[in-house]
Length: 161
Image (cartoon, rainbow, N blue to C red; front, side, top):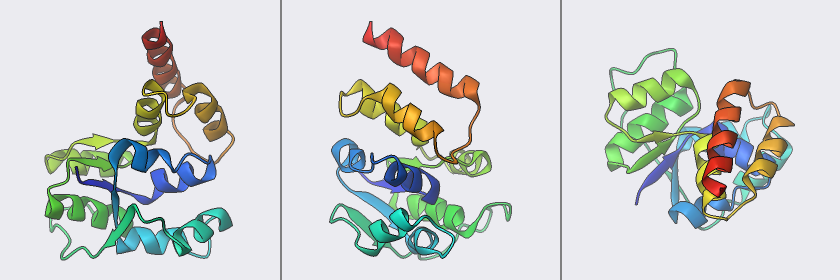
């Protein structure tokens, strides 16, 4: 299964010490060069810079051969390359958080999830403590609506019985 990931989900998984759920859920993760560059950027968290400077064996960094011509210029280069690479590789899943990027990916026919969806999946498979991961995430600069977080928690607790 080919899974392509954008900068933000990877960054926050590293910050909350949950990045190892990616290979457990999906095997390999592919990122475009622009995502690697964004993770290494000067303004990035040092923990993230250190991680990407020595990427794990399950992370594949690929060159995007060309950007899709119809992507909005509202999207950052990382998002544009992530969506373009996912289309290029016929990816089974793309992990994106930005709403405009998610809509652009869906318009390309891609199967989209975000950071919360990845954490939820790992929680329901007993790979992580989902409520604890959410608590850690809420201590970071990650931004989403409290209603969305609550809906994931409610669904998780219902599923746990």
